[in-house]
Length: 588
Image 1 (cartoon, rainbow, N blue to C red):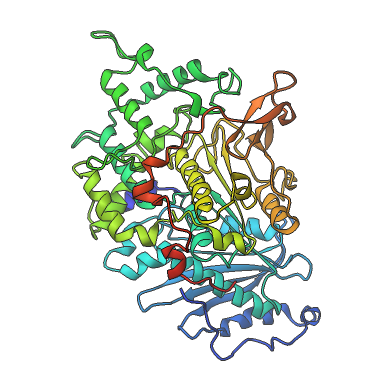
Image 2 (cartoon, helix red, strand yellow; image 1 turned 60 degrees about the horizontal axis):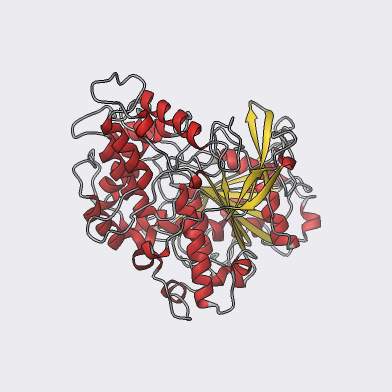
């Protein structure tokens, strides 16, 4: 099996001009009144969308009515698949599902992000949008081979498609489809994505601030080039040259996780019985008690080499020349959870002996940076030199680190960002760093702006016990369920929270997250707007979120000096950023 096939098998979701309709060939006159449209044959209207074309050669590949499904509560809808071709080298597949039963559609649009290197449409998420009354759309980001980065080799335009152009193409063309079918564009627009989808969520806020009213960005891999540099750096620590077995044993990860809980659980606002940390920023792990003594059995302790690896993983990579932090390290707590260090750090995963980080790192530096589909080993690589090259060539296209969100804020946009503290893929402090950079940048370019002002449009929620986008030992579910009847109100559901913030002006003061075992909720905890953290009140049932409060954390570990020169370039003059000048606001 080739490296890329192993990569595709093992990998999981890591999850520009305005389009112009060609004159005109809609399947029916747009002046037909919406209230009369439901009297016409639905299949004929939907299937007629196949005649829709755009001036750039983009087209509709298929359009068909899908019957309602009472079991899954999916309404009858029009399923449309299109191919966008903004350049001669672009093939961007997009899909849009539109409720088409006359009652379900709420005149709201939801665009969904994608994970990893993409290569597919997240159809389950599209269905989830349908259940909520959205017209929902998504794209394969211009890649037709699931989770393989090989699509960019020899195709520089596809790098741009993947970086951001596919998002704009999907937004514009999906809304053209909706307007043609329903007689009007959506009244409100939302974007939601996690991991690479979180990067995309911040990307649309920064590059296309007029396209979306509300955005949910989960565990964003927005410092994309440095994200993969950290993957390569971690792989160098974990795998010795030529080795296919991790130098950090699974048994040692379990010993480590237990010791972290013993030292820190219950001292960070949470419970001593929790299998995760409520605020890992307060935990300073002493590895001495679990480091093997000379000549002792290594069955229940970490060898000195393993202890050194753990310290490096917690610290994160540093540039060998500048001394700047390339990317934050991982947080302590729940290292041995099933979706934590095992698949992401130590491996093996699927048919590959390596971890997801090693596979993703090899994919990025092989295909994107070195333009090769051959297996690429990151272990001999000079990470500091490699990140300098990656930044010079790809940061502008792939990274969504611009902290100047004035255009998005000024048109009334709202942004909810969340990140799990037990994320072993995207280091949690990356989200804290971006939040702090926005706070600093907005104050620099808008005199009189305060942290409270920034929170009027942008709030970060750090989630204890949540892994990468999902899973984990904590309260790890932030969405309701239209099928099971789990609560869909703004206090328990991210989509409802962003809608209420956008449409009623009520910002989320806290969210209630649930821990599920099967479909049963075993406990709930509040998730607080950073820098507040949840803390147990000391009495009552700890499984009930009502017995927890949001309190400002004792430690907010942001050091702007580490990031000013290389990333955020603070302080800045009080004029529009180069990105804002270069990229005019696009129409919704």
